[in-house]
Length: 121
Image (cartoon, rainbow, N blue to C red; front, top):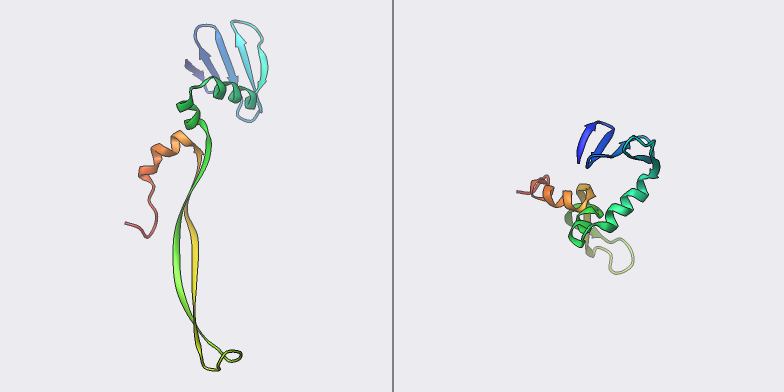
């Protein structure tokens, strides 16, 4: 497989795939033939189904979010109900996303060791 130019991929000696990033179709040509238009989604499905299990796991789209959790205790002085002047401690926990990564499972696993989360050492 070789990249002839930005929009054409050659597979073997006589199979060409013309790619237009702005289109939802690929043009698959054999030899000098005009070719057939195939939806990118359908082509992706074929590639996924012919791959082995390990490769399929790497091709799955995933979203990975690393979270930081902040815990606070708020002291509230009561004016009514219970006993006036009583202080109630309210625990509050907030989870904030620090890093959101979207992509294919295989590529995220390679990047995972390089992700830096602010506030962590």
